[in-house]
Image 1 (tube, rainbow, N blue to C red):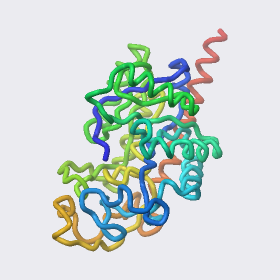
Image 2 (cartoon, rainbow, N blue to C red; image 1 turned 90 degrees about the vertical axis):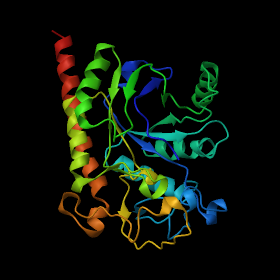
Image 3 (tube, rainbow, N blue to C red; image 1 turned 90 degrees about the horizontal axis):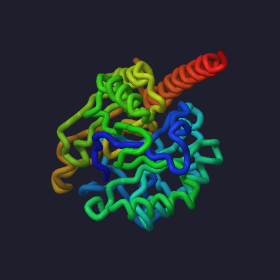
Length: 315
């Protein structure tokens, strides 16, 4: 399980900051899920005393059903979907050498590049009390050998991103980007549809989806702030309810013996019903469809800016 982060930063490996600011859209991606059929047991779906497949560690239920991130067909479907809605870069969660996420990274890279997507990693806070600059340097060297040229980490280098969509609301983006530009840093604020981790961690904080208006407000603020890059929290972080991947409402089988993390949410899983006035299957895919709208706007804005800058440079 990952923590909510405050202000994180973007490190370009072997590439100038301008390359990181190329006007792309990135989505945080989690390759940590598993099923008995492919992995010998459920991975992540069972966290905090939950009992898949009916009772899972999430407030929403994936429309695809419970899947394994080790499934090549699943990876191909995810990458095809992200590419189709205008996402340029997959930011894969990474928990250190030899972790399941590290072992799965080559397959993520191959599947993403087959769809023309760039791949970066988010270096998570594993062994955070022991990590030194030497350890980080070794990590980055290992990732560079896999062809990773960009990583999102905790130390300030080439830019800033926010990840935490509860703490960093749309009202903070303009100030964040202004400060980043003043320091010649890339500004890559994170947008997301909402947050609800009650079923998994018991975290009482909830950022409601409000029929899609939460997502729209964050995207609008990112564009208004002149973001160099937009990062999406997230494509499939089901534990925290930040996912834009399609969901479906199903009945939840509850039991009082299944641990304290199970108690805050009873009955049916939450659905996306009401998002932009949609219900059912259409609502289940609503955040993917809406993302495509916003990525088109963002890419058009960046293209117009680049044209204007080029024209100014020739005068």
